[in-house]
Amino acid sequence: MRQLVLEPAFILHTRPYRDTSLLVELFTEQHGRLTCIAKGARGKRHAWRHILMPFQPLIAAFAGKGEILTLTHAESTGMPLNLQGKSLFCGFYLNELLLYLLAKQDAFPQIFQLYVDTLIQLKNIEIIEVSLRYFERYLLSSLGYEIDFNFDFNGKPIEHDKQYLFRFDQGFIAVTQQEVTTTALYQGEHLLAIAKDSYNDIVVLKQAKNIFSAKIQFLLGHKTLKSREIFQACLTT
Image (tube, rainbow, N blue to C red):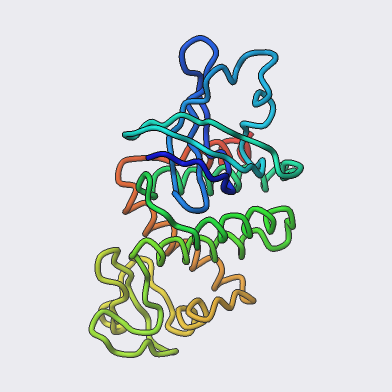
């Protein structure tokens, strides 16, 4: 792959590489997630030293072959998004989802725009949870893991007054009163609200969080999200 045209990008993660370089996980608009070497970027006088960081809008170019490319240009296109407190943890949560769920070097321009929009929304503490649920839902959908909130596993329409089990690989399964167990159940009317992205009811918002979190964890397998663990630890200290 050789890329000479500048394109919008964000840094998802960096780590030291050799003496003065960085290994950069980059999310670009037209080439998706890339791993690049930023040669000399840790040097005190390097122009990239203060811009290769998460939540900093960039335009970037890269070159090379294979899975690890060379970053050839990086330029700030504005001030970094000033995320603090819960907003900052949520931003790192988005970055981890993209790192773990996106295949390398696959273009996802619609996810890139969704990511940019969500980062901006995270600055508004009042809509953070709604913004995250929207991001999770449409990330899963874009990757081919859409959850159908309108029909159950058997193809029957979800009904307001019925209760449903959620299974990662099947979707929603209707249960009768005689079948109700201690397993988490979801009310049909709440599932239909999620289908419309209608989160005015706090119960709907919490159930959406449970469903999307369960699906994402299923896809992650044994991987854990550090941003979630650190945030929970901060809440208990």
